[in-house]
Every structure is written in C-alpha cells, then in structure tokens.
Length: 314
Image (cartoon, rainbow, N blue to C red; front, side):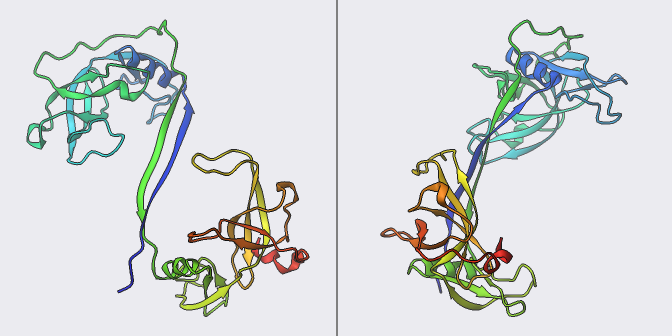
C-alpha cells in the first residue's frame, strides 16, 4: 500500500482586544482577589459580567461583589489536559454558581478523580500567586466544606490602575493528512514536477489537485503535468517579518498561473527588486537541494504575458 503522508501543523497568533468598562472592572477585580458581577434591571447578578442584558439588551453598569465560594451546577472530567489548560494533571471542567450570583462561571476544579466530583458540591476559588488582571488569576476551584462566603454589596471603583486590554494567545495544533490527489501532487514535487488534475466536465486543471472539481462537483482523476513556468497574476509586497521565517523584508508573494493550469497557486518572487514585480511577469521555479517544493520563483526573461492570457485566473 502507498505510504500515508501526514504532517504536524501549528497555527498560532496573539489575539489582542480592548475591554469595556464592565469587563475592565471584572478583570481588575480578579487581580485584587475580588469577583464582580453586574446587576440587571430585574435584580439578577451576572457572573462573568456582560455589558448588556442578554434578555432585554439594556446597558448594564451596576457592579456587585459576589463570594469566592459557590456550587457546582454541572461538570465534565478532563482525563488528559492539553497545553495551556489551567492544570497539568487531570481535572474537572465545572460550571460554578458563586454565592450571590445568578449565573455560573466556567473554570477548572482540582479534584483527585471523577468520583470526587458531583453536581451540587461546594467549592471555592484558589487564587493564582501572581495575578495580572486575567481570568487565569483564578488558578482553579477546589473542594470546600466550610461556611458559604458572604456576597458583597455594591462595589466601588478600584483605586489602582485599571486593566484596559488583554492579549489571549490562540493556538491550534493538528495533524494534516492529504488525500489521494494531494499525495500524488506532493510526490511529484519531490521529483521537481508539478502535477494537477483535470475536471472531466469543465476541463479546468486544478493545481494543487483537490480530488474533485470545486465548480462542477465531480471527481477528478486525469493527471496533467503543468509548468514549470508561469505568469504572475496578482501579488502583494510583504513588509512585516514573519516569526521563524528567514526572509528579509520587503519581499513579494504572488499568485502564479503555471502554464497549463486552470488555477493560480501562490509563491514567493525572488531574483528581482520587489518594486519591479508586476502582473503578467513570466517566472520559473528555483529549487534548493533536498527541497520538496520550489524555494521561490524568478523572472524568465520572456516578454510579459498579455492581460487577456491570464485575466480569468485573477
């Protein structure tokens, strides 16, 4: 049987957002070991607080302190914690209605096992040693057999520096395994050839092949070798250096319609000043030893292609 190809991939970026007055007060309070909710017009206290009543859409602003103790309303056991989760050992995800709150807060519960967790159990907040004004200032919840905490009353504004924004790292780890069509495409690249597949209905040649025509919805099987030369259809100038990418800025990334292909693929343009790259530029791939795909594309020296020759591939 042919080898099943697979590759680990990571998509990661920092997500930065500003905070409104209510959530700013909530995170500032966590930094001070205080949990704040917001009171609605009908007397409910929402924790975590929101800027607008989810029922009436009324703007909310009355902050109320609630207790650091509460009751588990529902839970699920996490037997294999992942990177970035609150605890490194198995724990329970729990919804906790803090004393004085009308809604539940999602967080982790540190418990020895699933048999130690049940709906209705009493818990309390375990505060993080170092607090910065984030939900992680609550390290987790832990079982609590003591007296219920005393909810606070109306909360005054904090005298300290307010938390006005947060940076939340977003990361997705996954393993990608190409299907039959893309596996053939990757194998061809290892021999410095580019292979697409032709749709039996519209006759377009898709590169990289997808195993089916996205326009006609029919399977594709006929392999067609394209290129290696092609035409720049559109491009952009990159001025921000990417992490872990050893390419000096500015540089150009372009959509390139390889000769014989019915779909443009993207690639970096080299061998020419970035401000001389243009639509219609004829290019060819440049390979490096041991590489499975072209390092970049460079000008061939041919006259530029006529716009009519690639306008359908923009």
